[in-house]
Image 1 (cartoon, rainbow, N blue to C red):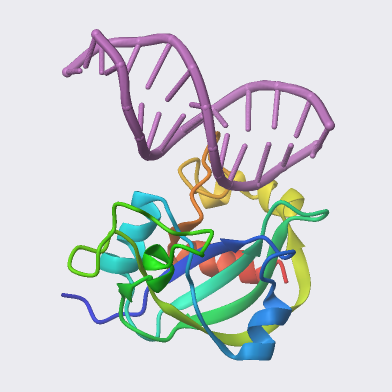
Image 2 (image 1 turned 90 degrees about the horizontal axis):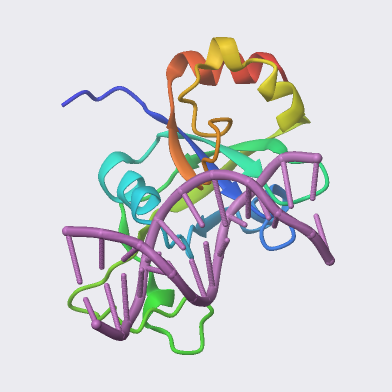
Length: 156
DNA sequence: GCCAACGTTGGC
DNA sequence: GCCAACGTTGGC
């Protein structure tokens, strides 16, 4: 297996949890992901040290707000077992958890937020399959290639 | 706040 | 296993 660092994008609604919140707490268990594809990327694809772009969604100016790193291997999301949690899943048990997460560590805020509007102008370079701009895609965790990572950061 | 696109659920 | 109904996402 390759030991090369991988890259990812993770979305968050800044009203709920922003890059500033991540800076404040330094490291955060990325809980609440309830999509199987996104879970699989965290559980099966991510390794400690991988690069993460933090994207602000569902807000006035959506876009890439900062950088983080994967800070743990995947482990069960404890909120799935908490009946008081918004993310409670009655079908999950401690023996057979459904949802996994990784810890995400703050690295830095971008010098400026890279707006979705500008990212869309790079569709030719990023490729039609890029999950952020692919039509209809709502994935909240997905891979970014090294080339895409470099291109996106060049917009900073 | 609207709504298109998508994922999940559950009856049959 | 189909698919209608429902819930969610997220740009606008």
